[in-house]
Length: 177
Image (cartoon, rainbow, N blue to C red; front, side, top):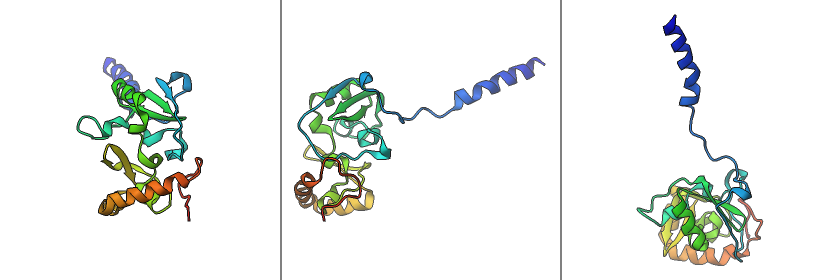
């Protein structure tokens, strides 16, 4: 009887102990942010899944520190930059971002660098990236990134000309042409 009682008690605990870790699905309330930083930067920002979280929750600083491997951010270390929340893996990365956010946010608002060069806005994938001269560039997928890498300077030049022409509220699928 005692064995059955212990088995039932253990079974009751299994769902809580074995449940998947929480994922970032909610926006952090403004009063829970570590900081809010604003400047005169403008332009559309890619926000995946309709949430107000940049870089799909990846830590923008992690691309340029340590071994440069992108890390998933944590909403505990959220910083708002120009109204968009960015999540960081730790407090040090959040503080680094706060000191110079323009250095760490992805080029073209996190939209695909190759698409921006063509005058289009397509989702940027935080796992298809390249840091060039201290700037983070995202691409839609590996195939597109391979195309982009065939002429990085040329694509950056064209995207630098095109991106400012998009309205601040432009979204994925919008085009200049």
